[in-house]
Structures are given as structure tokens and as C-alpha cells.
Length: 358
Image 1 (tube, rainbow, N blue to C red):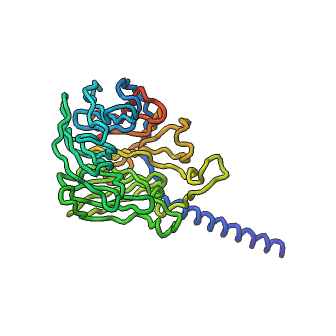
Image 2: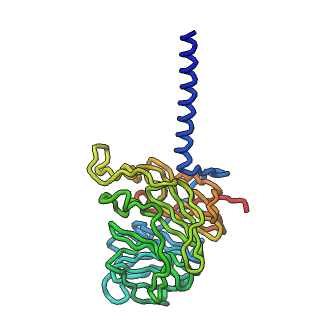
Image 3: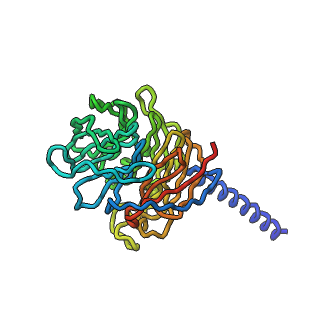
């Protein structure tokens, strides 16, 4: 009887422990929202040959044109213009240099209207807007745009004619702000989602919360480089407001900077890269998801996925690409992603056709 009682107590104990363990792991799962996509599409690349650009560094889509940024040092011009959708090469513009009407380090403004193309030259602290046609790029606006205390302006998205959503940073400080381009006034500022400066202390660097920004009129989204998180929001009454967060609920445990005994030269390279790009259209947000350690990002042994969300943060579809890309734009009317991998292919752009039921 005593043995039976002991066995009964042991059984009850095991049941309780299993319940606690189940509860624990369930709670751990709820810390990261599960992304359930109602459909998954496997899409194959259509190669688009490009002969004029030696090294792709950026791709930007306007109403009637696609612009490629040439990253090759021994070229005179930053940008090359192609007629869309046929990809006929038209001309290049924005001469490199320190002279008048020359540029040093353009930081591109995304979400510009129509066939306008804008950038801030970090090297000269100037802001320039071009209007593109089939034959020429014409400067339609130019002004100074200094950065306070030499802070780097890493993201610039146009919200309306005068408001821009930007991110300013240095290695130890970063802020997201809504500014008026013409008055240079900071209209609103939002805090960083996780208080990583306090959490990490002296080990904090802004690279831990690097994010990609995209916007469509007064809607915006952020996707984080080494955090599995996408944030959606709107600009209301000149204020920045978040409407939905998809992914982690609290900051992860990062691999900090320092020497490593692993295969990577620095311990920081062990962090998982989640998002490597972000773009949008009128209907959806498209997030380039890779999910590999930073040290393995460019080994070409993985394929990227594109997570598609509605603007309210609802998962719509998951696109599985047969070729790895690092940069992307979208044509929602033709339901096509266009991108490239700047570490592998330099002869082709890759186009991926997808389908979303309206």
C-alpha cells in the first residue's frame, strides 16, 4: 500500500510538473506572436539583364521609371534611369564630386510622388529633388539640410508635401522623428520600442535596433534587422501613432560585440538577421525575411522569403523566392517584386510574379 501511495504521489507530481512546463513554454511562445499566413506561394525569378550598371547598390521605383544606384567607384554618376516596365536604359544623373551640382553621399528619400526623386547628401548637408522624364532629370528643389550635432540621417520617407519621417543616429544614439522639411522643425518624436540603452548599458549600440522604414502617404511600417518585429502606424494630426506590432513582445537576448570563439570573427555576428528590406504599395507592406545568422548572410546557402501584410498588420501571404535577394521594390498593379542580390548577381535584376486575390 505504501508503494502504491508513493507511486500515486509521484504520478500526481509528474502531472503537475508537466502542466507547469506546458504553461511555461506556452507563455514563452506568447512572447512572440505567431505569424499565420493564409497562403504560401513559391515564386521563380524572371531575370532582367542590365548592362549599364557594374555593381548594384540600390533600386528605386517611380511612377514610370526604375532607378538603379551604381556602387562601382570608378563611375561618374550615382543613378541610372530605366523606362518601366520595359527596362530600356535612358540616361544617368547625379554626378559624383565636390563641385557645384555634384554629390558625395546621397541618402534616398522613399515614397516620393509621381516621377520625383529626392535625396539628402550627407556629405554636403543638402536636400535635392529631381523631376524625371524620358530625356532628362531636372532639379526642381534644392536647399540646405544640416544635421544637428553631425548625426547621420539614415532613413527619410516623405509623408506629404512638407512632412518627412526620418531617423537620426550616431553609434550610441538614435531617434525617429517627424519633421517639416522647409521649416526644419521637429514636429513629433517617438521613443525606441524597447529601452535598449538602459537594458544594455555600455554595451548598447544603435545597430541593435537597426530598422527599415517604408511609408505610403500617412501610413508607415518599420521592420527590424536583428529583431523579429514589424511595427505599423499612422500619422494623425501631425503625431506619430503605432497601430499594430507583429512579432516579439520584448527585447531578445542579443549577442554583444566582442571576440568570439565561434566560426565568426565577432560575437555580434551570431545575431539572427530577421528583416533585410521593406517596401510597400497602396494596399500592402512587403517585408524581406531571411532568418540567418549575420555571419552567414552572404553565403548564398539560403533563400529569402517575403512576408506580405495588409496595412493593419494582418498577414496576407508568404512568398518563397527561388533566388536570394537583398534589395527590393514592388509593382502592385502588375503584382511583381523586383530585386537583386548585391553580393552575387550583378548582371541581372530578378522579377517575381505573385498573386493576391482582391
